[in-house]
Structure formats: structure tokens, C-alpha cells
Image 1 (cartoon, rainbow, N blue to C red):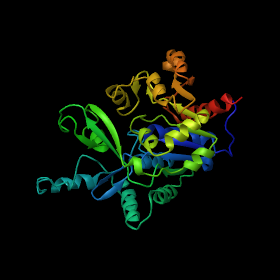
Image 2 (spheres, rainbow, N blue to C red):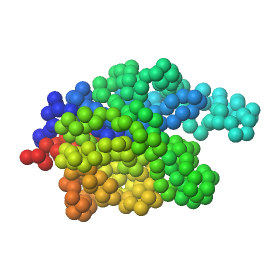
Image 3 (cartoon, one colour):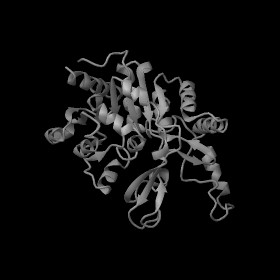
Image 4 (cartoon, rainbow, N blue to C red):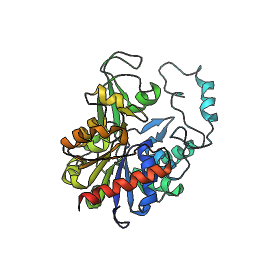
Amino acid sequence: MNMVAESSSVVVLAGGVGAARFLRGLAQVHSPQQTIALVNTGDDTVLHGLYISPDIDTVIYTLSEAIDQQRGWGLADETWRAMASLKRYVDVRPVGSIAAPEWFNLGDQDLATHFYRTARRSEGADASLITQEIANAWKVAQRIVPMTNSDVATLVELSQDCPAGKAGTQISFQEYFVKHQHSVAVKSVHFQGAENAKPNCLGELQQSEIIVIAPSNPIVSIGPIRALAGINELLSANRDKVVAISPIVGGRALKGPADRMLTELGHESSALGVARLYATIASTIIVDTVDADLKDAIEREGLRCIVTNTVMSTQEVAGELAKTTLASISEQRK
């Protein structure tokens, strides 16, 4: 099977868990030094005065083999004494205060990363430099890059009255995802600040041999990256070297709310629905074997469809998926 040369650069548009597992597989078949992960930061938040970048940290922890494999996020062998100690302050917290929030857990080891990121921001370092320093500390060879050095916030608009607020209320992605366990219906998603944010890696995207859209939520993981000025246009202009991996398998998301979000926002929750979202920016999509019956319908949307095992239950499967992904563009060019 022909693949992209080891000396060629590969750029991966990445969200959290699914993208991190793909990147770990990619490291088995392509030089990490020739790989760039352009990671969503729309999920970033500030809690306890600390700057937190969940997707970036998930990617770094996974590539360093430090991730908690069961949860898919956070560090292995984590403890939670700091979070448990917050309960002491709940009864003295004034009404309306945001001090000592308990709904977002930060592990004791994980706190060190947020301490470092916050201190470096206060010293004037930008997100790219801080991310590279953190990746270096964890001995990650792949280049991990935030999608922008500017602050972009993913906001979720509620479609009906619920405990999270009245219909039309906008809440942060982390409130939606963590505090309310993505159980509230969504009317729209907005990427605040994206219109004025300068994207990172435009040159690298242009010059890369292949661009991979990782199996991440197309709305809130890949969507914020696409919302940055120039990204969608660049992907469209380089569509022949863009390959996407569907995060929807058998109509369901393997992790997270992508399936419900797609349905609530008027899209089809299927590999075909994902293909339609990516049809203008990707020439190829990879779907799981359980969705083989959608191949013809997907190809009628103008994409080449490759069917393989996309459920990365082991590192070996992730490596095979990465190999197939790289080969898909090489074979298309024959």
C-alpha cells in the first residue's frame, strides 16, 4: 500500500479524544516530526482563574501515553483531593459568586498544566509557544498547534427552556458539555471571536502533502477551525489532498454529543450526513465497515468513499486506520 513519504508533512485538524487516538496511530506509520496537529481551542475555558485547553491537553496526554485510557481525558492514576476540598467553601460562597465551581473536575496532577499555562499567559507568551513548551515537557514529538493564538469561544444556543436557561440563551461549550452533560437541546452554535482571529498554520496547510480531518465532532471540534478566516477557502482550494474520517459510526457518535447535535441542527446523524458537511472541502471520506451500505450515496455527494475499521479500540487498529488514511490520497493521485 503506497503512502505519503516520510519526509512529507501531514496536517491533522483535530478535536479531542478521537483525534488524539488517530494521532497516536499516525505516529506508528508516519514521522512524528513531519506531523502537525492543528487543534480546536473553541472549547477553552477559564475556571478558578486558570486557563484550560481541554482538546490540546487531551492530545498531548494521549501522545505521551499519560492519558487515562478509561475516561479518554485527564491523566492516569489521577487524584482529586483539591476538587474534594472545594466543598468546604460551598456554604460560605455568596449568592451569584462563581468561586469554587464543582461541576468541572480538575485532577491534582492536571492542575500543574493549567498553572503553567496561566503563568505563561500572564508573562505574555502566546498560545502557540505555550502549547509547544507543554508538548516538549511531555516529550511529544509531533508538533501540536492551537488553531489560533486569539481567544475564540464556542457558544451553544438553547432551543427550549430547560435547567440550563430559557430558549435562546447562549451558554459556553463547557457548561453544555460538562455541567449539563450535553443533555440540553441545541438551536445553534456560534464561535465568538472567530471572525477576527488569525488562524495558525495557513502556510503549513498549503504546503502539506495531505490534510486529515480527524474523527472529531464536525460541529464543535472541526467547526471552530473552519470558522477562522481563510481556513475554509484554503481547504476548498486544496480539496484534492483533504481526507476526512467520519466520527459517526452506525448513526451514533462513539463519544460525546455529535450525533444529537447533528440532528438538532438539521443534519443527518450518519456518515452520509458528515460527508455532506465536508463535501466542499474534502475529496475523500473514510467510514466504518458498518456504514458500507452508505458508500454509493456518499459518492453521489462527490466524495470518494473508503470503507474500513474506524473504531480505534486498540493502537494497532489506530495504526491501520492512519495507514489507510495516508494511502487514500496517494492512491487517488495515481
